Amino acid sequence: MDLPRNAFRHALLAGRQQIGLWVSLASAYSAEVVAGSGFDWLLIDTEHSPNEVDTTLAQLQAVAASPTTAIVRPAWNDKVLIKRHLDIGAQTLLIPYVEDEEEAAAAVAAMRYPPRGVRGVAGTTRAARFGRVQDYARRAESELCLLVQVETRRGLERLDAIAKVDGVDGVFIGPADLAAGLGHLGDIPHPEVQAAIQDGVKRIRACGRAAGILATDEASARRYMEWGTTFTAVGLDAMILARETEKLAAKFRAP
Image (tube, rainbow, N blue to C red; front, side, top):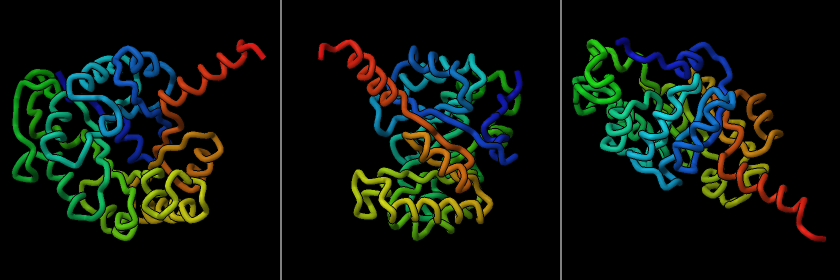
């Protein structure tokens, strides 16, 4: 059995736009539903969703039958969480709240086996197809993809150094936390926040890395892509469910 190919990573290396969807409902059933919708990638969120390793595993299994790439966001930049998500088969991770190059380097080390890193070695994991992938430990790194999330004022200050860390494949700008950090909580459209996003994307691209972001409306998503984002999430499953069901209910509610 061969090492699974990470289509998302190869698309980023080729500079192809990858359109994604945030998946936060913590359900393998709903993940399977949206996996067939045509997105390039889905982000299984464990930071702001009630997901644990077992529910994340079920969603990875549900998405595996589709051509869509599943990306996992661990709850924190923690080598134990990173190890556990890699072992259950995630090949691309998005690490939240990275503020400097040391934190980025720690995430890289957690993705790699010794002597290049600190990832614990286990031979019969789902990632290794339960020991059926020949030389998994030696080959795994070639198909892993690390994305780090910059979402604070300090992160912006250290953005170039973060992006240049060897082993970082892409930098994701977290717009909600960034807005809060810049003094505009809940106001992502604020001109200062938008200017910071545009400048951040430019700097990430200048460092030779892919830039990513999440947008919740079409106009913002298209604007960010024009600015240069390469992996762009264009919606959230929970938001779509909430807003669309509200619209449906309103159509039949008595005047």
